[in-house]
Amino acid sequence: MKKAAALLAAVTVLGGCVYNSKVSIRPEQLQHHRFVLESVNGHAVKSGDKLLELSFGENMHIYGNMCNTFMGDGALSLGELKVKNLAMTGRLCTDSQLNTLDAAVSKMLRNGAQVDLTENQLTLATASDSLVYKLADLMH
Image (cartoon, rainbow, N blue to C red):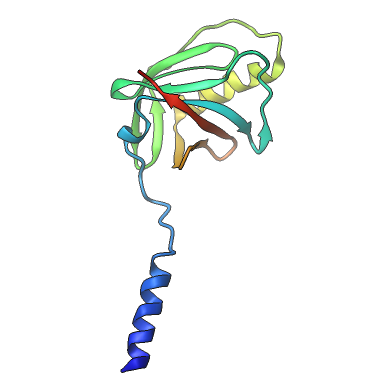
């Protein structure tokens, strides 16, 4: 009897350690938050004087900037974020890294990116790119 109780306790403890990658993030977890880009594909981002950010407003309205400013209405489905009507200004930056980031974030948001929110860190990922943001503050 003691062995069965010990086994049951062990299974319960270990069962709590299993991570379910299919857990979906909810819009309420993102809305009214602003995130600042920290790294791209594992490499720290140096943004100079300009903060590279992504903000989520009411009804998942997304606003952000790399070299260009972008915005649109996002939708979450099974942990994937898509912005079908993404609009972006069209200037060419003198910083080639920012131009590359513009193209990456545009492609990610239009085609869909997996979203992970762990504590104060937001990750947008596709098969080819990963953008990691840090929570900056709540939007008012």
